[in-house]
Image 1 (cartoon, rainbow, N blue to C red):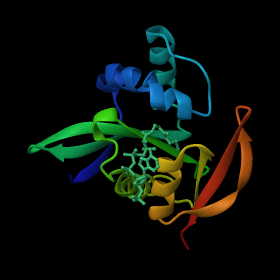
Image 2: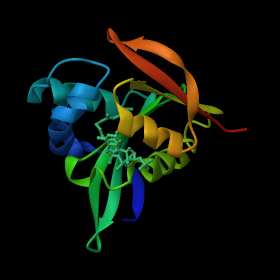
Image 3: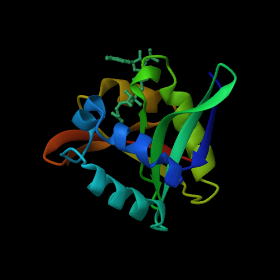
Length: 155
Ligand SMILES: CC(C)(COP(=O)(O)OP(=O)(O)OC[C@H]1O[C@@H](n2cnc3c(N)ncnc32)[C@H](O)[C@@H]1OP(=O)(O)O)[C@@H](O)C(=O)NCCC(=O)NCCS
């Protein structure tokens, strides 16, 4: 599957709402709680326009059509997160998606260090970030749960 990345827009509000409440995404999220449509829309539009971060949609070329297959957040300080739609998980797309996201986002935020904070139980995510060139950068606590920091340095 070929991948590309674009900035999210208002037409992504329903899909991102569905993704926000995806059970695995909820379990692996650093923050707790389900989103109601109202809270999702409020946060989504605020995040689209906050000037501090990019809200990115990852698209895959599936049967000759570019289809949204996941999303990523990339912050001015180099922090990032990623998720893939459940229908596209388990296909080794995470690490190429992470690399595409970084290439895209560093054009706007040219940071030297990209950081991911990942719950320690989230093996697929840790493996995917490692495969994308990240190295272990320490243990932490995220929302009361054990998590790890991984970083990738560009110089
Ligand atoms: C994290 C996420 C993007 C990874 O994508 P994925 O499609 O599940 O993972 P991939 O198929 O690309 O596989 C990544 C690696 O994890 C391994 N893996 C996948 N599922 C696994 C599992 N259940 N247990 C152990 N390893 C697993 C794969 O074998 C692969 O490793 P390898 O290349 O050494 O074989 C996806 O699981 C997701 O969207 N999760 C919910 C959101 C989330 O947790 N985001 C991370 C926060 S930063």
